Length: 116
Image (cartoon, rainbow, N blue to C red; front, side):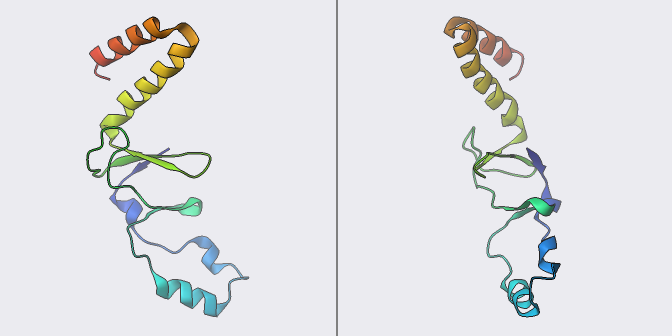
């Protein structure tokens, strides 16, 4: 999970660009290519291309935003205010399997009343 702010879009070349096995010719080609789209840069983890719309509410994303990586490198992008209701609904599905539908719905109803 990551909180994404404007500074995360500041472009810098990855650390591996300076590895000895990268030739000068390859390095120059990479540095000249640049990026055509906005990417969020996460240090050694690499680059992510944010989606335009929130996974949960479907509205256009603005900064700051929240991003989660899946095990297959898929990403979920959310407004900060959408994280809690999204997680509550995920827990509702888990609770339905663990304690039953009626109890799970009752918990979600209380969470919604508490602002989530």
